[in-house]
Amino acid sequence: MTEDNTPGGDQPRKRGSMRRQDAESTSPREPTLAEQRARRKAMLEEKEREAAEHEARQVAEHKAETRRKVLIGSGVTVGLVGLIATFYTVAQPETVTAVCTNAEEGVVAEEEKCTEEYAESNGGYTSGGFIFLPIGGIGGGYQQYRYNYGGSGTVGSPVSGGSYSKPSNANVTTKSGKTVQRGGFGISSKSGSFGKSGGS
Image (cartoon, rainbow, N blue to C red):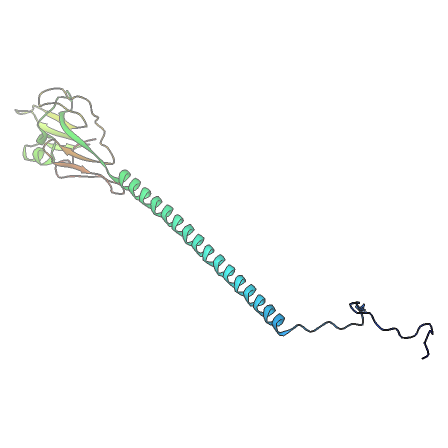
């Protein structure tokens, strides 16, 4: 039996040894069927997660937009209610009582003496917001009457307070409830049937 001691001769590979692979020349191993299934499952789960996150964002944005619109709508509603309430508060005219007085002495007189109808039926006339009623007897002259606005007092006593300037935006009535003037926001002042000539 001849022994081969030639250097470089083929030597048997030892058990358990690892063979080195060249990364440039070695082809990658194809994934197994189980690995392919695992990868597909992972990709599907990732897509489902992204879709769920996208839907959640859309729902949250929709809720936020709805809440914002509700808040804006509530603010507009409150603002309009306040504006309307303010309008009606301003539009609501005050009520002033007209008191017939003797224009020369400022004494409270019977309220009919400040009406045009009474003056005409008793030989008097109206001029410049005054009622002129004849004084008894021929050549006796005329007594002047006019309304005091906001004053008070009983017939025969001096009027207390008030003004002889007719208020421009007010409901003016006599003590008995007869209308002298109707006032209001956007409504021109007009004298009633018992005050067409009264006031200044």
